[in-house]
Image 1 (tube, rainbow, N blue to C red):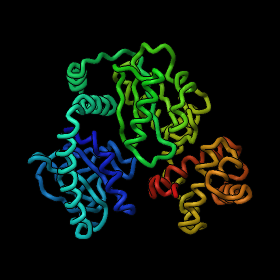
Image 2 (tube, rainbow, N blue to C red; image 1 turned 120 degrees about the vertical axis):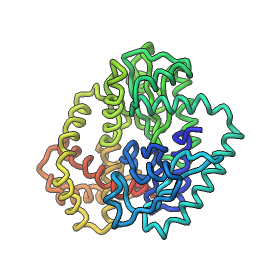
Image 3 (cartoon, helix red, strand yellow; image 1 turned 90 degrees about the vertical axis):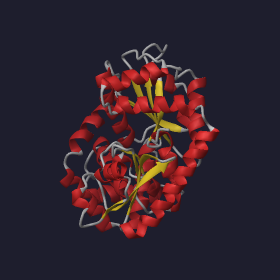
Image 4 (cartoon, one colour; image 1 turned 60 degrees about the horizontal axis):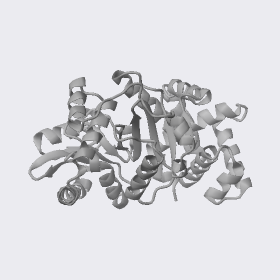
Length: 375
């Protein structure tokens, strides 16, 4: 049974009990397949690779972390189901402090998988599509994709469209996943031979060529926008271009707080390229974050970030944003003006301000996680 199929659910469950901890789930190659730090998904974790290969717990301390590329200090425990290592769970912290917790999670995962295997045997095809999706995004070779396509009985027809669907608000992940798939099928937005699956708490969709309308046109008339935001990358003309299309959609999803964003929109494309350039200047962004952390206490900074996120997601509407986060309009605008002042962007135009704050929000979420913006 493929680890990717359930890793997001496991992360969500564990993070409820350990809200302040970074938690990763890695496959047997050491690739992070799910994490409370979404930006780390798809990256390599040396400690997990060793734990999966040896079957032994790998503890990483402040002194040894330099020996483990892609890792942080913590405890990495192999996940064993029916005698087979299926992956590794890593929990951030002093190894001695989190070892017992990690071992408990290992036991939970084993029982979870066994129950799922008994209760839902039809998941095999779903798992194959999930694996195919990962291969398309992070290919290990055309042969792997070809074999999966043969097993599932699907042909790819190019150019393919890529869309990423992220939940607006989510209380029950399983319910949201069922709801969004139901809407997309009912509205004819996904066909049986399209490739889709859930990764990092988002629905990733690659549509085969042959739909009556473009993905962008279909989304505009669908009620799916009531439960999520949608980001669309460039069409992929070949299999080799699929990872690039996914990357562009993924960046739009991170930096733009809009119901629908697309690389076909000039403004969205411009923001994508500006973001790619600006994000390379780590020293500049670090300096801006330092300014914010010196100016605001932790709780104050969280409220300022929540305010900015709501303001830009709701089309720069002071009225809508103030209602959503339950503050007076004057309070909201005061916070935004204070943010502009501390970042030294008061004299910038609206486009420049939004670009800067999208970068700052991304840096903030890397440190604090998405849950920090929710009450």
